[in-house]
Length: 128
Image 1 (spheres, rainbow, N blue to C red):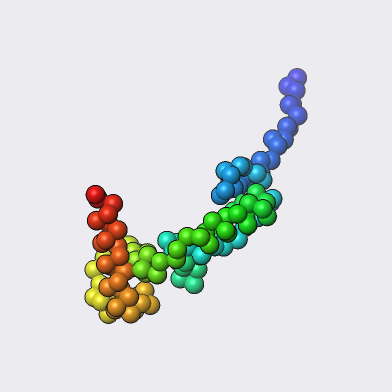
Image 2 (image 1 turned 30 degrees about the horizontal axis):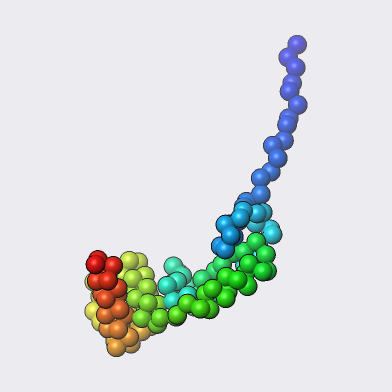
C-alpha cells in the first residue's frame, strides 16, 4: 500500500575555519592555532589572556608568517590598559571611582591615567 522511503543520510558538514593570513577556508580539524602578543586584545572573561590574540592558520608556514607580522607590531601598554578599563566599564557599573577602577582592572592610578590619555589622544587623531 504505502511505500516507505529509504532514510537518506545527509552528509555531515564539518565546521570550517578561516586562515588569518590568506583567508582560505578548511576543515576545523586541520587548523593550526597559536597565540601572538597583541596589546589591542583583551579576553572578555579571563584577564590572564589579556594581551594575547588567538590566531588560526591553514598550516605551519602561515602560522609562522602571522607570528612574524605580529612581532613587528609595537606592543603599547596604554592600549592594553585602555582595553582593560573598557571591559570593566562595559561589564558592570559605568561609573567607578579611581580606587574601584584600580581594584577591578588590577592597574595603578598612574597607569589608568596614562591609558585614558592614550585613548583620548587616539580619539582626537581619528576625528581629524
